[in-house]
Length: 221
Image 1: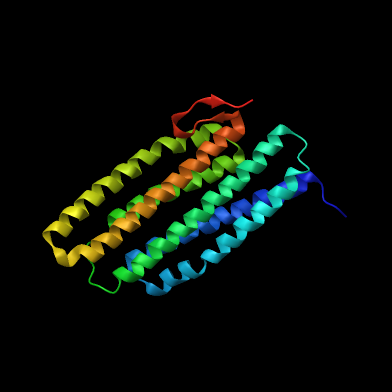
Image 2 (image 1 turned 135 degrees about the vertical axis):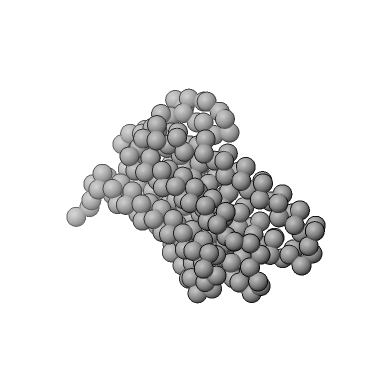
């Protein structure tokens, strides 16, 4: 028997929740691998990236099929936003994979600096991602709007760390490879926060039909 539109929409949302949980777990495990210098865990994160790739394709396929059945303009918005959310979540997984690769490279050399700063900023990025996911599930634009300003704090952290590590490379040529790997990890965390911000902006659009990307305040008919 053919399922109705609402049942399929619930299944699509459930798949996005699964995808968000997996993306968050991948980042958490990648940072845990950094803290514990754990090659096995880093390799697992890299190997499991295919799960997010598959989920993104499944979400897109479901959304495309549902677009033909969507009875309301709000349903069309939800389905197009669902595809954008899945794309951002897949890219979070890509960043977790990048972190894992850099962790394995760092583990081949003596530790340059304690990883507490990076694990702290990772916790901030993951908190942003969690709140963005919750705002999407609840379709709560107020909660989504709270995520967006937090991105600048992570951007500032990355800029400061990049400058600190660049100065260290100038002073100590033996540190160059390790510094570059740490800069890439920091940049990946910044991008994860960017993806959380993207999801939050898309939730505002979904709930209020307002496009606030790039500082815009454009209402959509």
